Image (cartoon, rainbow, N blue to C red):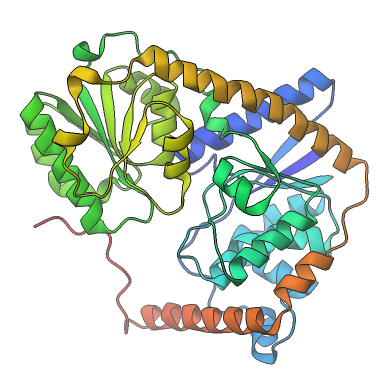
Length: 413
């Protein structure tokens, strides 16, 4: 059975993206081995660019005319631009398409940005009539037409499994904990007082100012409490201005680590401050607590609700001295007990997931009626048109040097 995993994030730089996707694919292969099934997992990553291609004639013409974006020509053109020719060919030859949302759709994404992410799953479902399964992701809790667009994809899927309870409650389907929770590294083996470092991370879709404010608070807390800072995060460039201060305090400023390297580094970490959801899960699997700000979706909020050892900070400017009591950190054993509950649920639901995939491979795909009803509404077409041309105009102006692209890596003053 050929399974195309759309939006596979295993090849991305971000530790969390690699952690969740690698564990998810490994679990599918484990379930297939248990069932005696020959499973071939095919990676179809998204390009994850900030803007779409400025020239897409079929898409632009459909939007200008107010016609459907669900035509095969538009969906294939979009999929080639957003995912590439190899991913499109792999989906076309697959028995089942699995859409892996991860956290790639954010609260502030407009309708066209959502379409850019969903074009290949829609191409598989609407044009190719492939069985579609959704698994291991978060959808923002939209309350407008974007919710209807996502609900239509869920309705068209043979099965949908969300990685957090809040997405599940909002969109239906089943809850299956994030595959990252199944990381099989060793828990920290040293007493908390003997672990020297505080892990400092940025937050997804946070402002530069908020990321730097939280880092500033964390460094001040470390200095006041004799803890060494360790910066290891996707958005490390934003914190580059703190590098000298971190190293002068006996800390470490890291720009990249493999999963195995991160596993070793976390053995010396006492606690984590930041906003990286998957780094918090990585820490949980080692018995390390996290204090998190809310990031681009509700995922950190769900993590704090469901997992012992995660606390939410009210803002990036929070008083860490009041929030974190080093003498009363959560016990690793209690954190690991909470992790074990999530792992048990994941193992159970992943078997249900694989059974759904196997059943879908031998059956007929659902009709795309729900997608047509949602995406072909006049108001949605207008929103897509406006968002697309606004996006395309910015790309052209930037290429001409008229508009400066967003600067994310300025040093703090």
